[in-house]
Length: 380
Image (cartoon, rainbow, N blue to C red; front, side, top):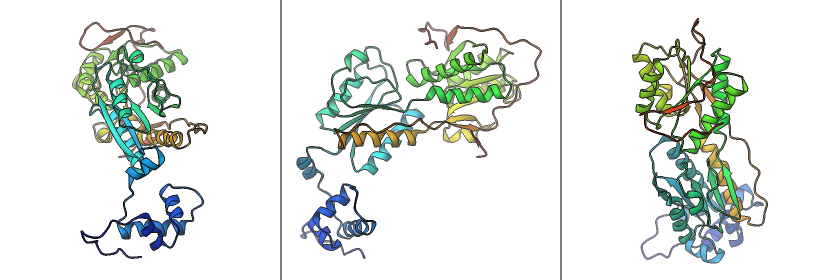
């Protein structure tokens, strides 16, 4: 089948009946192909899609919405930030939604706005979306009470507790504690007696989960739990932490809550004469594109953004289109530790490692609420 010539401005737009006639099938079959239903042969599906391309047919989403009572749109509530993690997760969601045939409507929230989620969800409901994705990584004070109104469409929450009440609520994107566990196990297997932690800001759920995975792993191995240094996700805060940790000769391994802070940390350690990895091993988190090209290439935990988006949106679309069916089963997120050149066995030491500590400190010295308790590469 070859593409037809372009239509003149006076030619009526092609209809589904025209697609059916050209493909040699019924209109019902065309509808089944468009809705990705089962029991359509590969040959029939190919003929319909080729007819669509040749005619330049575009589906009338407004008419479909009136007929089905659905807008075939999914709303996304996301933090307005250029940080790698939230931005990458949003890109993953956008790619998956595009493939589902749904339109995407995004509303950004701002850090520090306790009513941001509530307002964003209300805005999307006013637009008649069929489902909502909440990718809000920060625990804003007062959010629980303000956003606990009932939502009558399916909701998917990524990497955070459920902030709303909904009849069909789904959660995906957890497991940061298990990914942190893999990083700590790697460092302990190399022979380090304990591992220090440069944490992210503790208003972020992901930072809490990574800290808890670090602490739980050290505790399970009976190792000392050093004081926590808290950064703000930036390389600058990692650099300040590195200058602080470089003064402690007992530091031989550091688990950092994201790669940007790890890069800043490594520079500060190097400037202080502490070699990486000969004197101090460093593990990051995220596997940002530059991680493989810094010096030394950074060992890090790769976040499965696309896998989380793929599974989460599949479950959300299923809940939208099958309101009376049981939710689809979930699976554990993949854990991918990328071992590069920033980790090695510890240097031979004669100085004893300090005993267990429970204190924590935030960079900058300001008062801070207590932390919660609790490309050659090798993949593990």
